[in-house]
Image 1 (cartoon, helix red, strand yellow):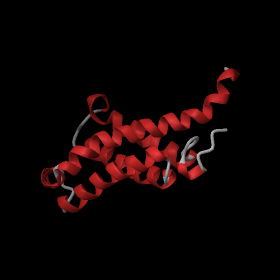
Image 2 (tube, rainbow, N blue to C red):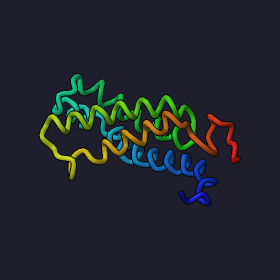
Image 3 (cartoon, rainbow, N blue to C red):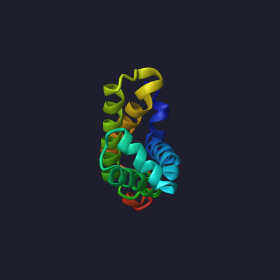
Image 4 (tube, helix red, strand yellow):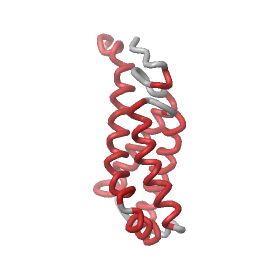
Length: 133
């Protein structure tokens, strides 16, 4: 055990929250900018109606990502994002994709989102009243 690192544990919740938010925002913005293409992509994946599921995921990733940055609703968003990543990983496995160059990011994000759902937002989060220590 490296005990000197323990005081930084709370800061890692903040880092995890911000990195997960950045990834979802980066993936959600293109979906939200072109909902028609996004709907077609969801239909092609068999997630019908594509317009409904595509819009839901685009909205979740953009608005949810922004809320994660602020640290608002972290535990609920963690569960919603974990559900999304669970479905994404299963879809890729079902379609024969392998762990490497396939669903590795999905399962990593699934675990990270479960961590956020469990631990909450950490420091500098609306959920915690922006407590620093």
